[in-house]
Every structure is written in C-alpha cells, then in structure tokens.
Length: 238
Ligand code: FPP
Image 1 (cartoon, protein in one colour):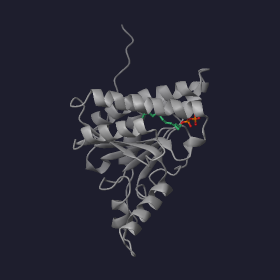
Image 2: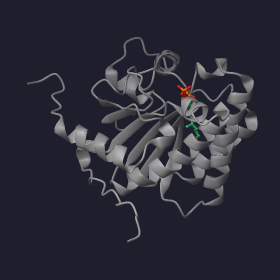
Image 3: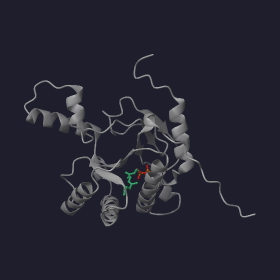
Image 4: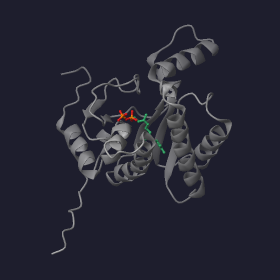
C-alpha cells in the first residue's frame, strides 16, 4: 500500500482564539544543520510563513501576527539583512499581483522610517489594496515593543495629552483597534518574549516549542491550539 502520511485535522478555533502571534525563531539553525548559509534558512522561513498563514485560516483563526524583523535585527550582517528585506519585498510583490484573490488584510507593524523607500511604497500600496478583509495578517517589521510604546506616548504628547489612559495607549500602538493576541507561539527553543507585542501580550497565553520555524507544521500548530484550549484564562481573577 502507498505509504502516504495522514493529514492532520486542525482543531477549529472559536472566538477564544481569534489572534495568534508567532516569534519565528530558528531559521539560522535550520540552515546550519543542513550545511546551508543562514539566508537559506530565512528563505525556508518565508515559505513556511505562507503555509502557516494558510493553516491558521484553515483553523478559523482571524488574525495572524509574525515577528519578521526587530529593531535590533539591523545588527546582523548586511548580507542577512538584505536577504530578509528582499524576501519581504518579494512577498509584497506576490500580494500586489494577487489583489482580489486572497481575502486577507495585510498590515505592517513597526517604524517604517529606516526602510528603503521602494519597500515603504510597496507596503503602503499592499496595505491600501488589501484593506477591509475579514482576516488580518500583521507583519512586524523594524518592530520593537518598547519602541512601539514610546512611539504611542510621543503621539499622545503631540496631541496635547497630559494624562493618558490604557485605552489611549492601546489606540496609539501600531496594532491600534486590533484585538490583542490570545496566543503567542515561539519556535526555536528559547523561552523569552524578545520585545514582541509587550503591551498587547499582557494576558496572552504563551506556547514555546523546540521546533525550528521552517519546520512548524500542522501537527505543531494543532498541538499549540490544543494546549491553548486546555488552559484556564483567569485575567487576574479566580
Ligand atoms: C529568527 O531566526 C528569524 C528572523 C530574525 C527573521 C524571520 C523572518 C522570516 C521567517 C522571513 C520573513 C518573510 C516574510 C515574507 C514574512 P534566527 O535567524 O535568529 O534563527 P537562529 O536563532 O537559529 O539563528
């Protein structure tokens, strides 16, 4: 008999798990284990990002946020930074070519100022062309959680505010008006949050796995979803 692999049936998520965020760690190690340059790991990671977005859609998840490039990632070798920017630019080209076919709103979180002007322009066009869909994909690019909060506070100061509320800050984050993540998944084995969605993840559940990002598949996603539903969220109550 043909030895085909059984297809994983993803749990169907309800409103309790409508936003999942990923810290996509482990691309470099994935490549090194295969004797490949780190950039090959990022290429495999970018491919897997597309697959994971589709899988999340299949599981009924409405918002997916990924940590693609942090405010600290500029310290990496220029060749690696350039490859990451090239991968993002290629993804934007694909999105722009497929306008009207894929029902996903694309949003970028982070400070666009240091990005190449051509990339900034593609981001602007892609965000505009995909606005108002039911599902959202947020790509955190030149993103830092502390930087985001400082940015929000400065925006409020420039609006003349002298006293701010939690709602004021939430509304001025890059994620303004979006629901906070219910679940944050980090691949690659490290157990830290790395300045990702610091404000928004105050009550998120975390799921850490040793699986490297390019290997995150339906089985791992299903395990993370099941683990999420096995937890009791108390938000500080009993
Ligand atoms: C961390 O792994 C990963 C990154 C800094 C980049 C993540 C970016 C992508 C997966 C591509 C994004 C592209 C699109 C289209 C969204 P690492 O390199 O630090 O891994 P290591 O810990 O094994 O070295």
